[in-house]
Amino acid sequence: MILRPARPDEAPRLAVLWRAAWLDGHAGHVPGALMDARGPEHFAAHAEKYAGSTTVASEDGELLGLIILGDDEGEVVQLAVARSARGRGVGGALLRHAEERFSGRHDEAWLAVVPGNTRARRFYEFHGWHDAGPMTYAAPTAAGVVDVPVLRYVKPLL
Image 1: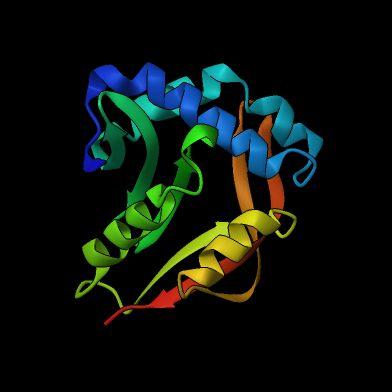
Image 2: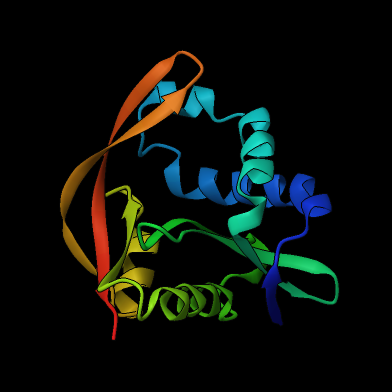
């Protein structure tokens, strides 16, 4: 497995991977209005929008996962791993990449996770992140903003 910057021509494949992983972690845990707004077209547009800040994990041409970083804020905007690649260290490698990239530039890295996504919460805690408390994420949609209750997970950086 290698980690590398995403290529613009990969956006359609990244959108499919991202949407599948997002649905796995968010279905039943976020407001219905947000689920309705997160169709394939949303992920296609955002995969293109974030191409420059996306790192992918790949192996033999297969996309195993992606991480989108908000460098200015020290935020992990999105971490997504293909269902077939889970349990193989892909998510951990991508998360370490983010921590290394932010180290020396931010005191801590952070991300938002929905409380009901217990699989993701266990994963982050296993990797040394902790729940710093609730916050509300204002998710933009074509119909307006949907307020989503999330937990802010943080990891101090050396």
